[in-house]
Structures are given as structure tokens and as C-alpha cells.
Amino acid sequence: MHEHTTLPPPVPSDHHADANCASVLAVEDLTVSIGGRMLLQGVTFALQPGQLCGLIGENGAGKTTLLRSLIGVQPSPHGQVSISGLSPRKSRDLVGYVPQKINFAPDLPMRVYDLVQLGCDGHRLGPRWFSRRLHQQVMAALDAVGAQDFAYQRIGELSGGQQQRAVIAHALARRPRLLLLDEPLANLDFRSANELAGLLGHLTRVHGIAVLVTAHDMNPLLPVMDHIVYLAKGRAASGSVREVVQSATLSILYGYPVAVIEHGGRVLVLPHADAQAGEDGCYLMPNGSASGGQA
Amino acid sequence: MFDIFMIHTWIASTIIAVTAGILGFFVVLRRSAFAAHALPLATFPGAAAAQLLGIQPLWGLMGFVTLAVVLLHQLQKLGRKDVAAGLVLVTLLAVGSLLLSMTNTYAPAVFSLLFGQVLGISAADLWPVATIASLVLIGAMSLYRPLLLQSAFPELAISRGISAGVIDIIFLGLLGLVTAMAMPVVGALLVFSLLIAPAAAAQSLSARPLQALVLAVMFSVGMMWLAIALSFWTNWPIGFFVGTMGALLFTSARMFRYIRHRWFSTALPTTMKNSSMKLILAAQPGEA
Ligand SMILES: Nc1ncnc2c1ncn2[C@@H]1O[C@H](COP(=O)(O)OP(=O)(O)O)[C@@H](O)[C@H]1O
Ligand SMILES: [Mg+2]
Image 1 (tube, helix red, strand yellow):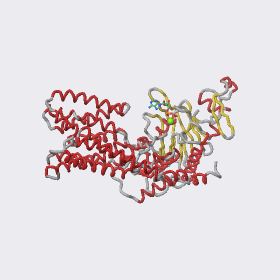
Image 2 (tube, rainbow over the protein chains, first blue to last red):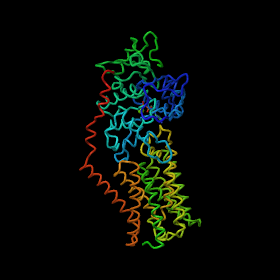
Image 3 (tube, protein in one colour):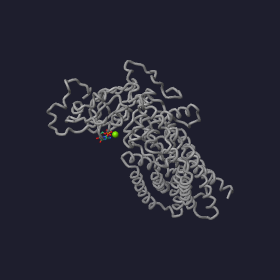
Image 4 (cartoon, chains in turn red, purple):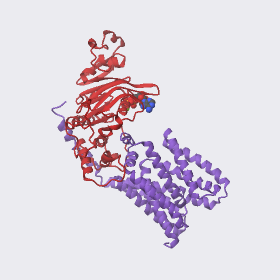
């Protein structure tokens, strides 16, 4: 990557121009099975620059498995994954990854600054020499997530929300085009979760990064999410939130009648009150239009 | 105490202390303390094997440490690190007890391998020590950043294409080399103390990785020098001093940190202040 000192401009210029390059991420017919069990089945979706996409599904739906396929560490995936036209293993510079909850030991000799520094050059060999450019790169990443205030504190002594931001800054350090986050909201209280959702929205709007964030609860993400991939039983439906989060679409994914209830701006997905409700057609697609895409 | 025959002792033990300090930093970071304890003890029977075969003790130690490293690495892949270390330890010690019963190694030799023997190091003994130390230094220096990242944040290293398996085997290899090199001098039981105590003390005192690493080396060298001097004057085994000073060092570092936190806590105000919220709140209205 080139050594600019700030995060990418709103519309990143594309050096790997090819036919399919409008999408930062294109997943086509991705199938993953482990030990004969199919965890993901024909998952297809695409992500444009500046889009914030929620990858929603219950525990065990395969969200982590999907993200691992996108960074090329999931063994034996079938199908196509392309990141700015490159395969996952060739596009490590373009992708930032924030794994599921990390436990930081309280006396780990690492400050937030050091973690972000390793985000810039952690893969390099040889000793690290002082470099102004490296320092500026680190500061830009800290700035992007609002972590300047605790940049010089031990990571293990920070709050969960601050640690989460530190890891995001680590992932942003090399100014990726695609940021993948695995359940970043899972261990946060309401306030920190809302702040973090706001931060992710900020990153997409101001820096033009495409963000894919997994969650088992879509509610905290609703205000900032402009695309959704809903996973159930290894299959996925993708589209706008309005298109996907409907009784009809989700019932087909689950293969079971599901009700979508909206209340005060919150959305709940519940098993339908009684399974017979399926007979009034609520889990069939309205007029056969496949709004859910891959259902 | 600075006689010509002691010069070799000073040189060898300083080199050993520096390398042990550096590797110890990563041992503590990787939470591999039990592996660092198991390796020297599992290597110890190598001396008996060497005597049976009539070869140099160092070759026996090298052979056993290689065996231990390979076993440890393979077992760790199957599951838990601590169980792997425990299994390697008991297996090789069992073999060791058999080998010892077959040789005519007499008690003082065994005793010095367990607790160290700093006197009687010859110029010829310095060569293997210097060679192994430079190998370890070059390895640790060229791998510094990936090793740091993989040790402190294994989950984050995966996505950067850093292979946990490769780092693990290289690290265990370096640890094995240091073990074989240091054992005849500081003893099997005390390599562990030299690896763990200075690094753990340093990490609880400094929050910066490089600073903590340098501090670990300084503690390690200081501890070694003091132990030799005290051992020389009192005629007590060096192992006694290394072990007790290690425990003392770690306890004092912990107490120092606790007191510093209690009385000069600077950590709290910044977490309460949270002025970074401004950025996010400012970005909210108008959207959503
Ligand atoms: N290495 C593995 N071996 C066997 N099963 C696995 C493995 N990894 C994940 N699974 C299974 O795959 C399913 C999906 O896991 P995961 O992707 O972690 O779900 P999520 O992140 O949505 O909670 C789970 O049922 C889990 O038990
Ligand atoms: Mg998961």
C-alpha cells in the first residue's frame, strides 16, 4: 500500500481496475462445509464502497465462518470471493479484520498505540526503526476511531468499548477498503453499542470504507445499516433492510413461519405465534418476486 | 572473584542472561511458562544419554531438547498447551530416570546439572554459548514484530497471514537452544527462573513492549551477576540465589505497581472524560 498519512479519501481511486471493480466485496455462491456438515450454502452478496452492511444471524448461524472465508483462513470454501477483484489471500492489505471478543490480560505490556503500530507493520521482518511516517499513520488510525485520549494507556486496563475501538484502529491502520467486524457490539452496554454503531457509520460516510459487521441482534445497527445479509440455517438473503427483514423472506430462510414485529423503531424476529399461521401464506414470497435475493 | 578463570564465567553467564531475558519476554507474553519449565527438565536426561553414548554432554542435551520441542509442538496442535507440556515433561523424565540408572553418573554431576555449576567454565565452553546466543539474537530480532503480534494478539495475527504454527515451532526452537546452552551453567531448575521472573517483573512495570523487553534483559543480567557474586562469597549454590532473587524481584515489581496505581492513579480521569464521544455525537445528527 502507499504511504499516505490519512485514511483514504471518500472515493478511493482504484488501482486494481477491472470489470467487476465497482464492488469492494463480491461473494458468489459461497459454500462451506466442515466434517460433512454444510455451514454455509450458496451465499451470494456484494458490497459497494461506503456501504455499511449488517451480517445478521443467530448464534451458530455461520457468521464467523463467513468472515473467516473472506479473509482466507477458512479451510476449503467453495465458490467465489473477490475483494476489489482479488482473492482473499492476495488482498490482505485491503481488508481490516476485527475478531470476536478478545481477552486482553491486564498486564500485557501493550498500549493502544503499540497495538495500532503493529497494525501498520506487524507482518514485517527485521527491527523497527523510528519513522515519522509510521507515527503519522498510527495517529490517523487513532484519530479515525476517537482513541487519542487513551492511546498511551495499557490495553488491558481499558473498558470494553475502548478496547473495541483500539482493535478497530489496529484494523484501520493500513487504510483498508473493507472492514470486517465480528460481533463488535456483543459485549457492550447500550451506550457504548450506540456509540460504536455511530462510529461505524462515520467510517463509511467520511472515509468511504465498506463495512461488514456481524450481529445476532440487528437493532443497534438499524440506524446506520444500509444493506443487510441475513443468515439462517446456512443460507442467506441480502438486500435493503426493508426488503429482507419481512416475515415472508425470513420464513423461507428458516423454513419455518417467522414473524417480524416492529415496535417503536425496533425490529424483532420471532417464531410465529402458532405454526398454523403458515397457512395464511405469510411465509410465501409475495407475488413470487424474489426480493430476498438468495433465499 | 575477577581472576582469569572467573572471566569465562562472567562472559558466559552474561551472554546467557541477555538471551534468556529476551526469550523470557516472549515466554511470558505467550503464556508459555509451563513449556519453559518443562523443556529444561525434559532435556536434563540428555546428559545421561550423552554419557552412555560417550559423546559431548552438549550434544546429548541438544538431541533431547530437539525431541522435546518437536513433541511439544505436535502435542500442542492437538489441543491444550498445558497438557502438552505436562506430557512431554513426564515422558522424557521417565526416559531420563531409566538412562540415569544405566549410567554410572554420580550424584554431584546430576546435582550440578539440576542446580548449575558456574565455576570451571573454560574458553572452549564459550564457543557454543556465543554461537547459540547469536543465533537466538538474530532470530528474535528479525522476527520481532510478527512474534510480538502473534504472541500478544494471536487472533489478530491470523488475519495478517502470520502462521501460528510456524511462529510456534520457531519460538520453541529458539527456546530449546537457549535451554541447552544455559542448562550446564545455571542448571535445569533455574533456566526457568531466569526466563520467567525478570520478564514478568518487567512487564508489570512497563506498558511499552520494547521498554519491557530491555528492562527484562537488564533485570536478568543484574540478577545473574548478583547471584554469581553471592555464590562466590558464600559458597552456596548459584541456583539458590537465582531462584530466590527471581521471586523477590517479581514480588517487588508487583508491589511497586500496586502502590503506584493506588497513590498516583492517572488511569481513571481519562477514561471518565471520554471526550472522544464528541466526534461520534457530532457525526450522528442529520443522518440515520
Ligand atoms: N472448526 C469447526 N469444526 C466444527 N464445527 C465448527 C467449526 N467452526 C464452527 N463450527 C460450527 O459451525 C457453526 C457456525 O459457527 P460460527 O460461524 O461460529 O457461527 P456464528 O459466528 O454465527 O455464531 C456452529 O454450529 C459451529 O458449531
Ligand atoms: Mg461468531
